[in-house]
Length: 78
View 1 (cartoon, helix red, strand yellow):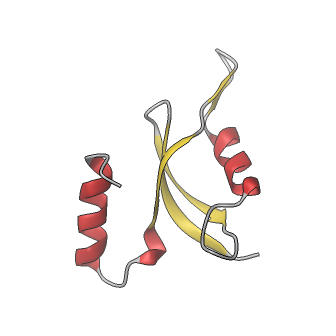
View 2: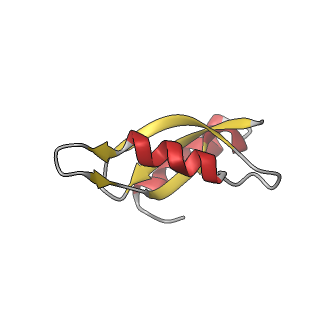
């Protein structure tokens, strides 16, 4: 199974860099979405937060493109 590194923002606003499995067309698989749900689970309130935004960090060929993508990510322009 192929994996890529993603910067994930959850519906709770928390973020994490995660290595997740991807499918044939580069999208995060259901198994990857389950991993995200477990990562952002809040036991105190029994709440599972899902992915709001994901940025594939391996999709960029240079630092300039990556920096621009992260700037757009921070402005919620995807």
